[in-house]
Image (cartoon, rainbow, N blue to C red; front, side, top):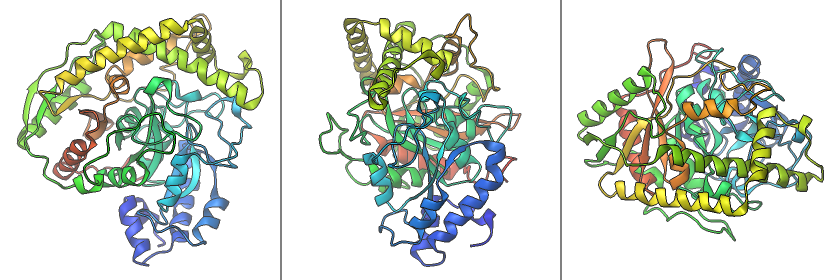
Length: 477
């Protein structure tokens, strides 16, 4: 394969088929990916740690016989560790930190035949819905270089949108798969809580808010990758209900006549941009034309209280993260090693008592039961992914006088995604809509707990009805 455009136009499943059919060699795909990264990444700043020599060496050895044998892949520089390669998590505190082992997720990615060629940019510890870390600088959205690609998996989403790789690792504690998928016009599925393992180092994160998966160009890639990586690991504290059959078999299967509730109002009362309202109404109309039963409805949820208690877990999780990394590295965390917002979150988290934290967990579990009852009537809940289209860099900056300003602004930007981290339900951001400015605006579909199958069936139906693979950002046609 010599044409970069040919490489960039295919999803991971198609590339794996070429390798399996001996039409191309894995090393050719790796070289195509490296060439595209070297050409576009100086503008994008999506890849912050190249792993070219490891990738070349892997590609020339005997590869595992997996669903994605020989396909280049990027790993988000947060959460999943790759032994012997720096994991900075967007933080000066960890700029020289090198884990000595692979996480279980990375081991499964390797067994799937993927060749990891680098690591992608993320905000410090994934705390904001943008990707502008002080350590590595901002990742640019390939649809508009002055705009955020979203976060915290912004480096991965920008890389997939620009065709550097067909899919990339991502994780999601408040929307960090779905937010950048919306901003960059790619597909992003957040799996059910504990569908993918977090071991061997962690049982869960932030009391179950965070999950692992990927952003992808196609629905079938997301399904096949989840088949390859999901399932409990030894010693997991809990795991998701096993699927009835492989997720890939759901792609192209008839979803039947689904009962879909849609809403355009944020539970928090945040103002929703007209483009995001239009995107949801457009998606609701499309679903109705496809034969689904669609009506406007939403669960009754005390949005302000939900936000307050979610943030208690966010504050506590930040303190847990920094204190834990201090123990791992043997270094005392100090202010100048962290961004001001991160340190403000850390200090806020240290002030919470164990009782207050667990009371917040209890409240959010009660809300989760209320939302589960809503899904006794509906199969899918449709909302905007975000309250705004991609916003300019600096939107989430904080001032010295108000270091938490950025997180306050973030709450208004992402009023829809965190509810699924609270409940543990699967959800997907689907790139069905572009606004008059030519920027992607994702729509958000939420499924029942444990029911990724319905989302994959619906996602594939939407992809067939309104294909998005041909839409290419101006930076990477």
